[in-house]
Image (cartoon, rainbow, N blue to C red; front, side):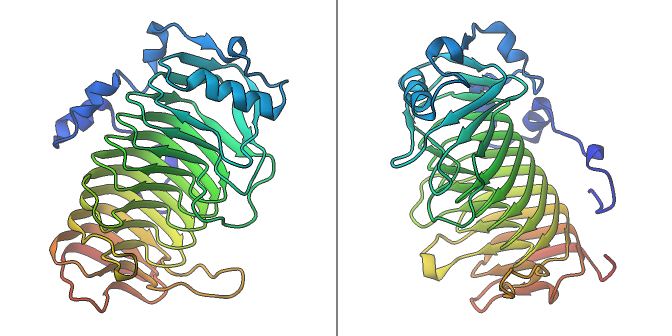
Length: 361
């Protein structure tokens, strides 16, 4: 477990073999993704098409790049490489939507998407199986100044076996990276910062895998697993997670079930560091079989909003409306604003094992 004063480079990124040894019903899905190593050797065996040859170029207008990007990837299995440069993308009005993409996108060093409208979504992928993204970099011409509900930077809707590896998302009017009703999404080595809502958000997804996530300065939760009620997809595993300065909760499980979160550091939140709940106001599902273990929560609930407001549930660990197989083990809580562990007003119970409480930051 990483301590607050240890260097980030000391943490270990799990290899594919580590995931397979851990077991779990959905891990066979990684084989479907074709993941051979986190070194991205997969690219060498494939024929890549330059984005320039598809009419997507740094010198183009943002509108031209938008039109050619959507045209090149929609209903396609192409493997496209983006050479170095800023690719301005017009995302105004209805955001660009790529449907049924099953190919690959690879960014060379120095390449990035720059979205021109900071009030709406950057890019949407809807449908499709087996899409792979390597080295993806995104930002906005001007970072979004306020939150605009329902407008993540990158939005994946009902995709299957999507792999995102080595991604940096800088800025969003909503969440940085949002998956909705997706099957076996796999995110590895992601850095998400300066978002107005969550960093990484999974809504009604099944068999999620996250390995090595860093979030910083998120306007809502750093990492969130949600079931807004009635979801048929469940399950997720996240490891090697660092959440810094989250203006809500650090890592939350709301309504979802069969979720395991390990090897995490949460440092600085407005609300609870760890949050597991059934939320009546959103008619969510009831969390079941959720396990947080081997992590550290520092200064939960201590961030004060710019207008002076303080958060709700200012505890390191908070759970509410849960009764079935909710576990917290081997967790260090340091310097919360109010208390180390609390439960809410709804009938709740959980198993807490080896929780270290400290007021030394």
